[in-house]
Image 1 (spheres, rainbow, N blue to C red):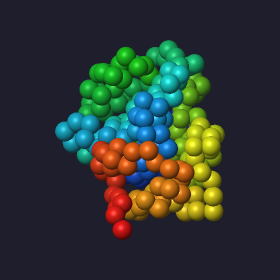
Image 2: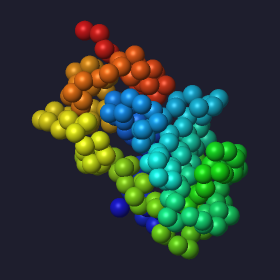
Image 3: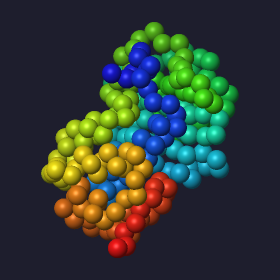
Image 4: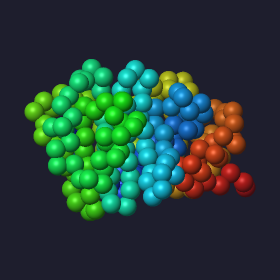
Length: 212
């Protein structure tokens, strides 16, 4: 399992960004109301920066910043809070300071922090207690579409259709394939608001083609 104690199998930051977009596209299809989504992605969060968020509505959040110089992940698992943030961020490159020590991260809290600059490997600060919620939160990034399918089957229950084409569609989204209406209707019985999905896909910057 990927965690702050075992991140050798963690995808590089470019692949991580693609996975973040994929799971956010899937959540945009399965939960059209943004406030009830687990994963969301904003490709224009700030000038030269993109942002992915995970929130479960129970106090757990994961915020991921992507910029040209690298990427940083802030995890907050409420059952393991508080932690010594100065230790967790020991050695954190200055380019991530505004994000990690500013808002909203500062108010949300931190139980783990992991980062990568340029093309380097992932790093963490000083960790004495690996009970930090990272294993549960980072599991989705194992780059296996089945992991998302298993999670979404439990989270969305009957709202997520499982059929002979589900894996193919989810795997295609993981690879960045152009999304079609047929793909969407493989995953949900019906979609209430196609215009909303288009807005979400454009915010994520994910390719789609809904015309025949």
